[in-house]
Image (cartoon, rainbow, N blue to C red; front, side, top):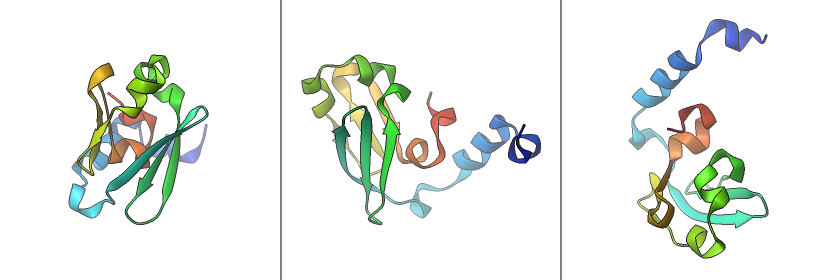
Length: 98
């Protein structure tokens, strides 16, 4: 077991991240699908890749449905498959996915 897991439980980590104001986070500027990953381009020029498997809804979606998204900079919305991924999920991990 890692020291980090000994120090903090997932619940404590999620609480800290959830309290972090969006004004202190980068915004999502672009989204792309690359093989079995989702690439999120942030306005601070970072590109974050997450496994497509983190979202069962997007994993099962057709390519047309994956490309049909909207973003407000903080969240990406896929209305066709009822999925939302936020910048906190991208930066802090799967544990925050609801």
